[in-house]
Length: 339
Image (tube, rainbow, N blue to C red; front, side, top):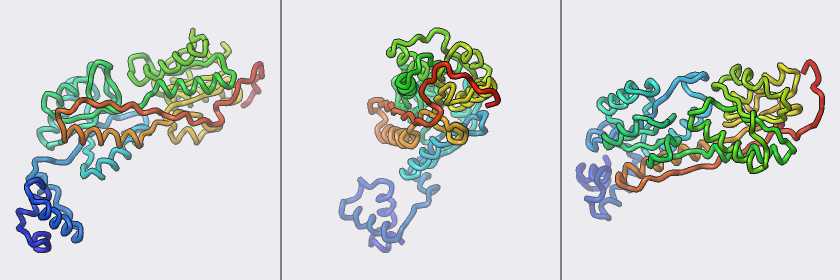
C-alpha cells in the first residue's frame, strides 16, 4: 500500500522504516509522507524479526505489603510506561526472587527466551549482581536508585536527603527542637539517605539527635511500636521515611491520647494517596515520579543508541507538601483524653 502510494518498491519502504540512511533524502521524505497520510503502522512482530530488536524493556516486579506494587512504584511504572510507549517501546513485567543467583538466572532466562532489548532496575543495593550480568552480556540498563557511590552506571534517583532536610527545616522554623526520625533498619540505601538528610539538618540547626532515631519495617503496626517511647520523652515532631511509617506514628499518638498535628507534628515521605485520606491530612515529601520515569527512558534510549557513551546520573529533588499534620509547637499543652 505504502509502496504503491509513494511510487517505490516494497524494499525501499522497508529501508525507510529500518535503514533510512540507505535512501536519498527526497526518496525518504516521499515515503514518510505516504506513511503519514495512510496512517501506516508496521507490524511489530515482523519488524522485530527484521531488526532483531524486540523493542521491549524488562522491568522486575516484587511483592510488597500493598500487593504486587507499592503505591510509589505503581505511580513510577505508569510514568515509565507512558514514556516508553511514546518512544515505540513496551514494558515487559516479570517476577523474580529478590537477590542472589535465582534473580540473575531469571534475567538470563528472559534474555534467552524473549529477546529483551534493555532493563530498568529498581531496588538496587550494594553487591547487586544484576549490573554485572547485564554488563557482561552487553545489555543496556538504567537503575532507578543508586546502589553504590563507587559504581558509575546510568541511574536516576530522588534526593531523599534533600526531602527529609526540608522537613526538618520547616519544623524547626515552627519552633520544634526535639524532632525524631522514624526510619527503616540500617542498610537500606534509600532509608539511609533519608536519615542522613534529617541528621545533617538537625546538626545545621544545632539540635541534638541523641536518642531521637528509631526504626521499624515499613509496616504501620511495627512503626507504632517503634515510636511509643518517644512521646513521654518530650518529642514534639517526627519525620518518617515513608507514609506507612508516619501512619504508624498517628496510631501510636492516638493510643496515648495525643492528636497528630496538635500535640506532635508528623511528616511522611512519598505523598501517597493515604496522606490525604487521614485526619489530619498528612504532610509528606512528594517524589517527582513522572519526571523520574521519563528520565529513565531517556537515559536508556541514549545508552541503546550510543553504547560507549559516558555514564550519566540524574538526581531529582522532591518537594515538601505541607498539610495540617505539621503544626507549630505548642509547649506544655496537656493531651485531652479520648482523642
